[in-house]
Image (cartoon, rainbow, N blue to C red; front, side, top):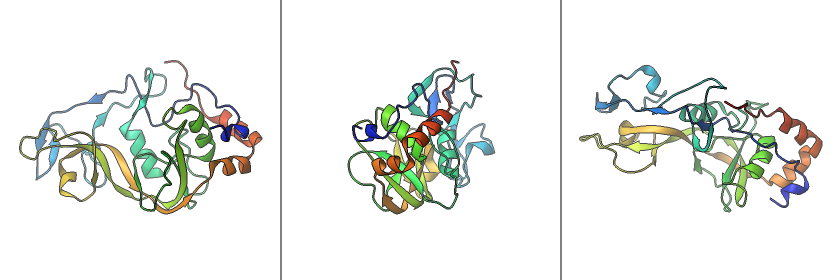
Length: 227
């Protein structure tokens, strides 16, 4: 953080990441059943499954200004999945300037991001990485960054249920698409696998972008109005 502060302008206070949860966006919990050898909701619709046919939690999705108070420790399932699927920045939701360019990933920890590493943390644009390392408590002390040439969907993070009793079998776990467990999971986050990984020195990248450009980029990131 100290090294970054030589280049980074102060992050605007009050920024809420695009993927964050909000107090009024609660999860609906439909009754479970089994159908066709897999877990299902009793009142299921096509919106409850992703393109791999996996069942997802059913979140409330409200317009801006009606979401209540931010829950920064929570991740909204739909917005997380959309950010992963479309390569959106998890903070500002902006699409990549060049869809063919590598995506930047910023993770908590000290160990370098490895080839084929799996993560449920969506990509981030470089300016928002500068915001995140200043404001996110998970990243303040320990973070690593890398670009990935591609980040295909690997699976999900969610709760696996017993095929007979339909009761949860444990806590949140990662499940690969196409596995037997994927038929009995209620997913809450998409997990991708990073290919073509190149470590990134954020201090160098922030310096390359320049303080003036970073200030302009920080200013465009929306701070939500009080709900």
